[in-house]
Structure formats: structure tokens, C-alpha cells
Length: 229
Image 1 (cartoon, one colour):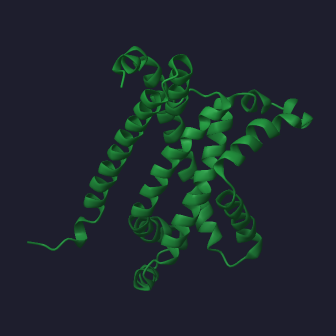
Image 2: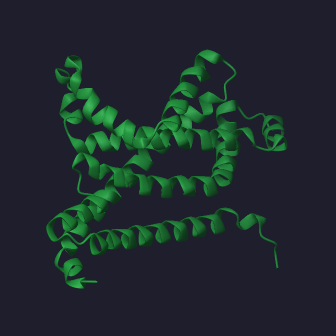
Image 3: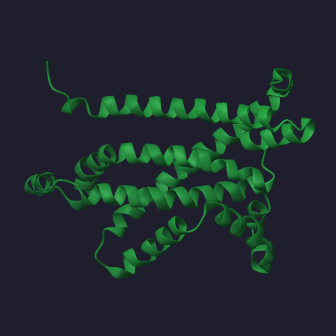
């Protein structure tokens, strides 16, 4: 293994790491902001409310992320209405297309995660909130959502990791992320082992950091469930 290839191109990997961190963190943040109200609305028994949301979730969970990226990056440009609109400034940029696809994808998965957590809220907690005279909004804010977030955290941590790994697809539309950096190094030196093993190590380090951070959050959020000494 030629370590000089890695050291000489370390700057490219750092650029890729920065782009990956931006894409993943922004898409997760915006996806979570979208998912919370969607998860609340999808629990409604009104088909006109929950129907479109379920269709959105089903589409983005049922199709590959790569196809979604291609539909946005290559597909939106074929519509004259898009080309002549103010949104073309964004859709002509690969970075925004990847961010848009990642956000919609993770929002769909997160909506389903939070919906399941909301629907499994213990009935006693709901009855206790109603007994104190809480409004539906106040009950959601103080009882249902905090309780749902705690139960959803282990599953959502998997979604964070899946999003990190899925972000490697950004390289197929010319974005220099971690995988894109490895492809550049490989094309220059024809050393796939060194190029992609370095990318794999970087992904593993980030994944370890995410798992450790979620574990610390779980320890804090579930402190009340640990036996008291």
C-alpha cells in the first residue's frame, strides 16, 4: 500500500469531508423540520390530510435514492417552466439537487419513524394530559412529542447513518464528497485500493462518532429509567 498517495492528496479528502458533512447535516436538519409536522398530520383519520403524506412517504421509501437524485438533477431541467422560473438558479446546481433529494428522502423515512413513535405513546400519558386540561397543541408539545422523540432515537440514529452512507451517491452528479475525492485520486493514480480504502476509513470514523454521540444522548434522555442506587 502506497501511503504517499494518501498524504499527497489529503487536501482533496478534507474537501470531500467538508462537502459530505454539509450535505448530511443540512439534509438531516431540514428533513427533521419537515418530518415533525408531517408525522403529526399523518396520524389524522382524515384521508384528505393523511393520504397525500402517505403517498409521499411511500414514493420516497419505495424508490432508490439514486433514482431520486437523477429525477431531480437530470429531470427538472427538461421542463421549460422550471428553466424560466426563479427556482432554476437552484436546480441548475448539482449541490442543491443533491441536498434537495437527500432532504426529501430523509424526511420521508423520519416521518414514518416519528409517526410510529407517536402512535405508540402510552395511553396513560395521554389520559393524564387530558385530565389536567391540556389543549391538543400543549399535549403534543409537552407530552407526546418529547416521549416520541425518546422512543424514536435508536431508530433515528440508524437513519442518520444510512443518510451518511447514502450521501456517497452525490459523487455521481459531479459533487466532490468523500467518495468523489476517492474517485479523483483513483483516476489520477489508478490505485483503487488506496483511494477507496481511505474513503472507507473516513466513513467509519464519522459513523463511530455518530454512534458515540447518540449513545451519550440516550444515556441523558433515559436517565430516569435507570435504577436508582
